[in-house]
Image (cartoon, rainbow, N blue to C red; front, top):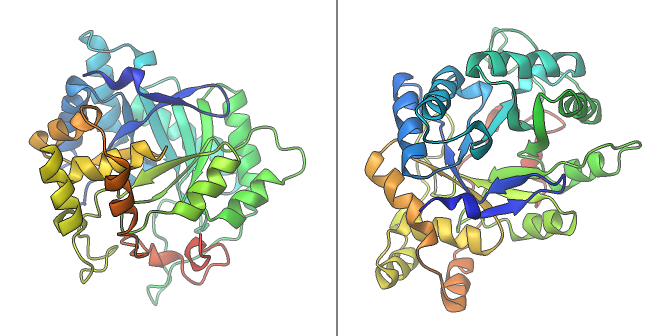
Amino acid sequence: MDPKGQRVKLNDGHFIPVLGFGTFAPPEVPKSEALEVTKFAIEVGFRHIDSAHLYQNEEQVGQAIRSKIADGTVKREDVFYTSKLWSTSLRPELVRPALEKSLNNLQLDYVDLYIIHFPVALKPGEALFPKDENGKPIFDSVDLCRTWEALEKCKDAGLTKSIGVSNFNHKQLEKILNKPRLKYKPVCNQVECHPYLNQSKLLDFCKSHDIVLVAYGALGSQRLKEWVNPNLPFLLEDPVLSAIAKKHKQTPAVVALRYQIQRGVVVLAKSYNKKRIKENIQVFDFELTPEDMKAIDGLNSSIRYNELLLGVGHPEYPFFEEY
């Protein structure tokens, strides 16, 4: 099924497909795999592709998109592509060059969505994670409102259709929304969101401002030791999710994705496994009952897999706020 019809309208008039394909992979996965799985995802019906400068695979992801355009599977306007501004380029004068670098890697004329990846500014330069001699991150100090103004200019220049943020708490969103002479509101806030961290307060806040919540880590999380606490439970082994999946003859992963779509969240499904990529697109083939939704809501236990601890100690570290 082509989920092209399954889209929601952003506050700037553009449309985003409610199901996206996440392309992040751990460093040990060869970059060539990003090319293969992205092509496959487009072939089975994904029309929303999410990547970032940080993932270091935009060249391969862009190649995949262009090859599927070249062979007639899709047109450029059928594909919704998201890229992200990394923390080392949050100074206003670095924003456009960072986006142009992504476009150059992708070999595309524009991206559909460009978002601030993480509100914590790091020292500009080639290193993605600049560290001092003691291994501590080297922070930068940037006013996010100025960064936002630079994103607005990128939208006006046609380099991106829409602009948004990621990993922002409600206070950081408020700061941008209340900024004098705001030209464009963020269309989205992409955050970790799954049944163990359902973000209901942040979701309500975003809905009240016509901002779409985009869920990453929607299936729990890959076990990357530098990012994720290994002692946390596996979401997809949860008995409640498993029972609901069994009832609907679906996988727990598809149930976790469906849960987000039914609550008005745009959801990213990240997998480098072809069988699972194919399963994940079946999210449109069934519906969860209100009882199912309530049971899944009941799993919320504020478990955050991606604490992004490298940002702790920076005044803009977002996760000390309740939402």
